Image (cartoon, rainbow, N blue to C red; front, side, top):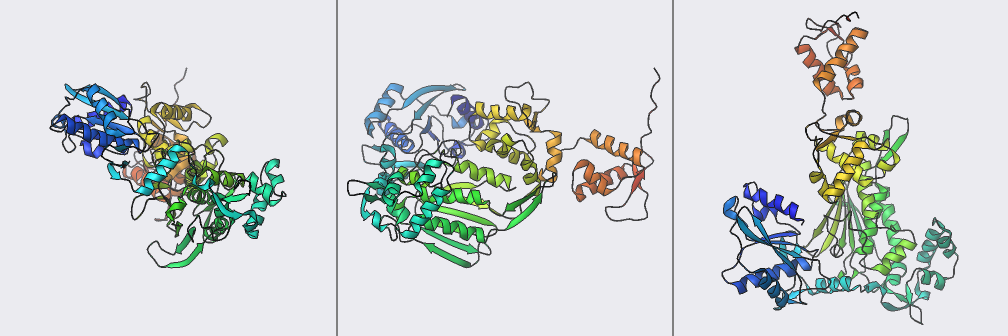
Length: 578
């Protein structure tokens, strides 16, 4: 955590707004000294091991967990060099940390910055833990082995099996050739007609002089692969999330066929909602965008840990769709950085074969596409979580239900560059929920640092899209507060929960319309302000209450009721002669 961000966090505790424990998370922990220096060093060595085995983190010494306000700041007395040396001596392999003083409101605090490890770390007592949200949890032997492989670059799927290319399933081979014929580049298209051995070599799934299939090749192209669970994918469909499953499918290897059939099973039960744009184009909005589901499943089967001997689980209902894979996220990837951390394959050999076949993204854009497609369909972003019970797993959750057609239509009419930009779409989604945002608020959502987030917001306020504008009171600040421009606000209409309307603007437009046409009705107000029937009703009620308008038609109910000038209708001022 950057010092500037840490100081803001400490200010929340000092002011009494938050306790230290409520601010702890995946990369931040607060500690106090123990009665003896030796005990303090042991406690901090254990906390450092915990962070090193995860994505690294920051430990602040001198603040109590439960207190708030100045009373929570008890300070630290331990010597910096002594503490650094003790942590180094108490860990295996020896862990190098950065320890520094941090004066705060008259108190001496210590900040220990722990890098993400290049190895699997433990204390000299053999304790191996890893940070999990705000806790340090013991690692199972399987977790230690998996983390050790990932950090050393060992690929379990590149190991040879006792199966040769003659055991490749004929249907799986036909499917592979079909995928390659549809590849965008000629090099891969030529592979479609290559002999089986050359094709397997191109996919990098054979090894040795005897041309044995690797575990990746066996899982991908052979039936009853011993390298994987008997069931690699299990799919269940329910009419309601808590109801009985009305359809259950189970697939074993070859994975290339199971993957395709799973996609077909989801598509067969995926509803479509038509949405018309202002240009007359009709968009077919799926309950769950097929691109997003495909990427979620590809990530699950590529990065799921086959050593767990558990299948990828898909739970599908009209309201929610979840894809759960065995094993945690790959080391260094967390739900908080999954959009920007880049692609890191748990099994590079299997991932390479998938990419050559065109079943996975080349440049790690799969997660971006999941988020982008969900927002474009007028729905909330996917939720990515790691679960530790009953076994480690990674879950991607998509929320279904009717799409927000206004958001879908608005995004479809953005300039091409912004329509394909994940940052833009996430910020638009945020501003449908809240009136203003700052770089500090948006940084966690788009998963960029403060400077990068500010650059995105400034681009959206001055680029081709001109979606945002800084508020008048913050325009001169280094990090202004931004809101949607009036044109974007009008286009989104009811999709924006707060729907800002300037009173003077409403007055002017209503009065000008009545002066020109004599009357106004609910339907006209809907068109002028891009609001729904109920919002238009409330606007007219306000004008009638102020006696600016009165009902002038015999019809008393409905959107066609006409209103004309009332007793308080403003008179038109004559122009002054020059």
